[in-house]
Image 1 (tube, rainbow, N blue to C red):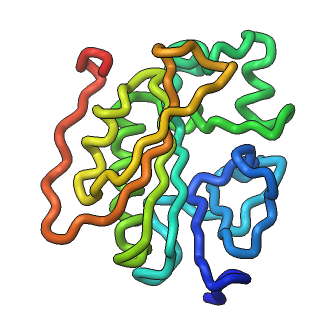
Image 2 (cartoon, rainbow, N blue to C red; image 1 turned 30 degrees about the vertical axis):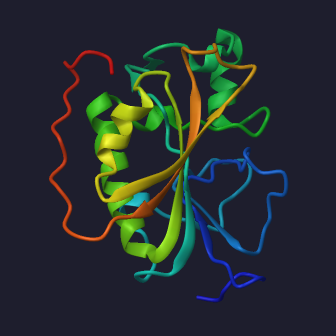
Image 3 (cartoon, rainbow, N blue to C red; image 1 turned 180 degrees about the horizontal axis):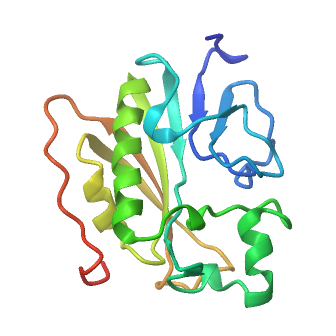
Length: 198
């Protein structure tokens, strides 16, 4: 695998339509996604749970997974307060190059298992001195609760992000920077759909 233009190798593991980027075509970033109908195609189509890379190749991994799930074709709560008529187009990235991916998971348990399995792969492909940037919005699960899934990681920094699309204090978004812990990991705590909302 060739290094990026400046020697830094970055994996965006949930690239979507690259809506978080000002410049969407960096030579230092591998844009990965498994969704085939994106408006901006990824560098590679792949699943975060089975990454097609060797061990310890990335300096940084960006992970912005879905923050909620769907049940029988509807979201558990309104997505970022998007008006109902615009919701479907926004989810598919038809307008505004936005893609949330929440239709990929039908339950809280399914989403948690995905995040757990993905972070195990991130630990494998990230260099020992690399960092993981994790984005989370508290539409369903509080950030402290979801960080419990990242048992092999040490939190270095947590930045709350303000957004006009969210209700302050209700759907707070965070970017969390983490590094790999050394040593043995603990088993994943059991999550069920019957638990109270975290």
